[in-house]
Length: 156
Image (cartoon, rainbow, N blue to C red; front, side, top):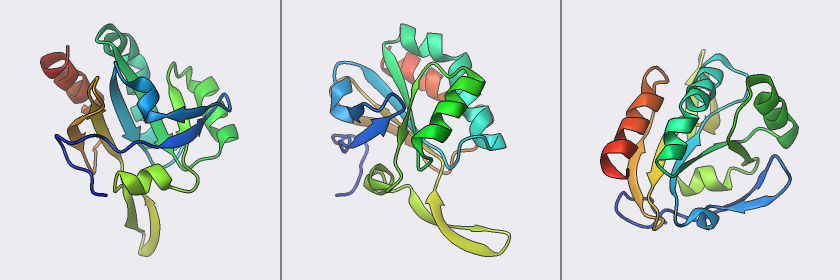
């Protein structure tokens, strides 16, 4: 299955920090900002999560749910949420099933080493479950504001 703007977003089921099983399909009727990020507590990921936190109310007013996904374990997500007062759910994708569905599980290079990991990416899914916008290889600075502007202009 390939992911494509204008088509239904691939459904998945992952564990949330409250140990509940969450399906993307559970959010039909609401707009969704689904963002994949590499690792809790790292500088870029912390900045991005805090930017989503600081704009959470604006997204909520547009009936838009924010969901973060990374391969980190549940305990690390819980600490991340608690430390930075994140008002949205983080899902555990330790087997990178959702990351593979969304084609963000990629070969990465850092300091000459190659490894598999998450390519920072954001997807906007409309109330019907259709993928309407994607950003890949996201640069953190200004990204959340850009996503919010897209939702305001196109789904508000």
